[in-house]
Image 1 (tube, one colour):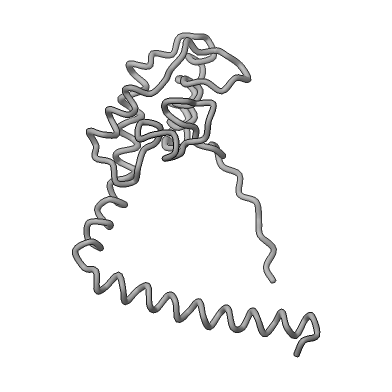
Image 2 (cartoon, rainbow, N blue to C red):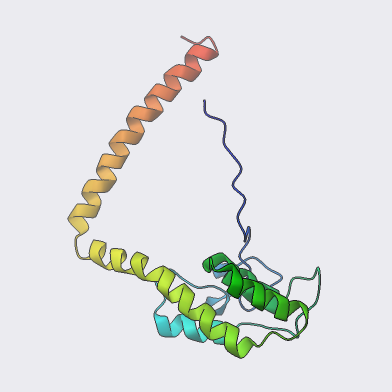
Length: 156
């Protein structure tokens, strides 16, 4: 059996927009998370109303750190993220600049997912076909795995 490998990301946990001390979850209410299906306007509104702080609270999970972590997760340009990071550490981060940029990068990241979802919603028969094929493949793989396990533990 293949050993699982650890994957470390820049943002191992995405925290709630309205309570950055808690993990992002539907349980915390609609304003705590961004759904993959949220419209651009809904994303902008949620980000604009996200909890912030005065910055520089080292070691403490807070709104500013949360937004900055989200931004870093979506943006690969280290010059931009380093500038925001420096401003944050100095207590000079302007959320009026960060929030619109964050909303736009999230909107752009979700566009291909939302487009594909709309395509799939228009063709439910295709979706059912793909699901059935996947189920068949899973049965084959599961049967092989069960045979291997039974053999290894001496039941075969």
